[in-house]
Amino acid sequence: DVPSQDVVEVVVSPPFVFLPLVKSLLRSDFGVAAQNCWVRKGGAFSGEISCEMLVNLDIPWVIL
Image 1 (cartoon, one colour):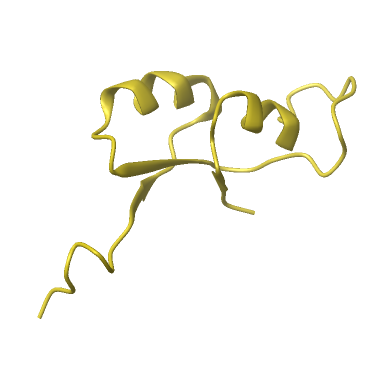
Image 2: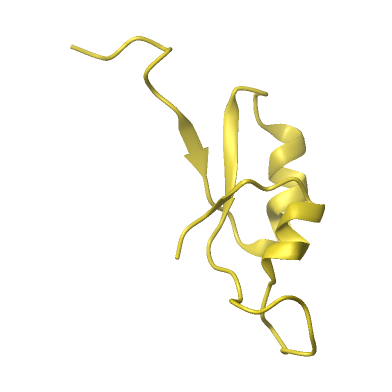
């Protein structure tokens, strides 16, 4: 038996550069997650994505 729609959340996790695009193309009831995030607030950490950046993109999920 498949749980009702009220119980299941669908969340996809594309690479960071595609987060805004995927978010704009998905159904509004689907979630989008980042694949990782940096533990510190901002800064010059080449290649790292801060939680602050994800919040600015309205991405509420992250896989750590």
